[in-house]
Image (cartoon, rainbow, N blue to C red; front, side, top):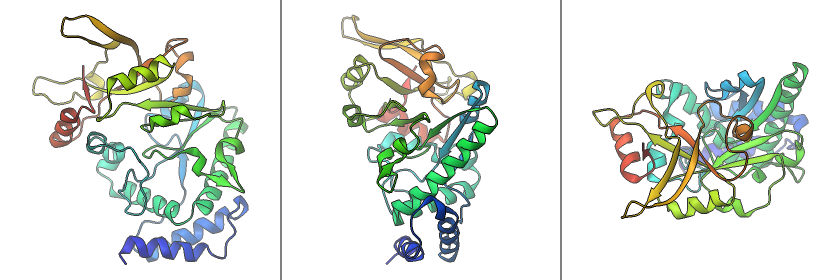
Length: 310
């Protein structure tokens, strides 16, 4: 039994006598923290936070606070796969290692620890999550600030995985806007409540014909565009540009399809795109500037087709 397996088992044992209710959120996190520290892991104080990254914080200019949760992506925690459609390119360019996480090991250690709690017991994890969302919502309401939730900062888990007493998080907070990016395009076939907005993410291994279908059905597609410098490296964000539209031509140069590109780096609040300048109706592309990382990671992301050159 490896350390990860032992940690998950120890977490389950620590939760055994605690009912998974929001009233017990404090007890659950106290038990989780103590167990994780005993097992040599980070001991996070919370599952999520408000405006917890520079991009999420851009919502402040819209008088918006966003609660966001960062877990370990894909199988990086060693206990559960939080990104079922992870690809070679997206792993290479993953935000798991961007921003402050690139030089502060404590950030990713906390993300792994949170993911181990999720792997150990979804009901207990969900009870804490519901409690944290409710507190953040009440704080925003008291301050006269709009409030939203993005469950997947560095993961791709269905919101229906988070339930307390059989009620999922979208239904429990029906008045709160939730939004996510997802590579699980089959979620477009499901029926979601009005308070949940999904942006479908381009990734290597996909066909543009599938992307066109998503947009023809009125969906938004997030695409990481790579603006390269003379050396073939990704330009830093402040100097990188986005196309105003993107499409495909055939061998004779005839346009096969094209969609407008909306700047998705202005804020992260995707559910407000159409109010902020995206097309009022129909599908569109959410343009994201590819993030500069290592030479090898950029090479893989470009070669795989995950990054789309401008």
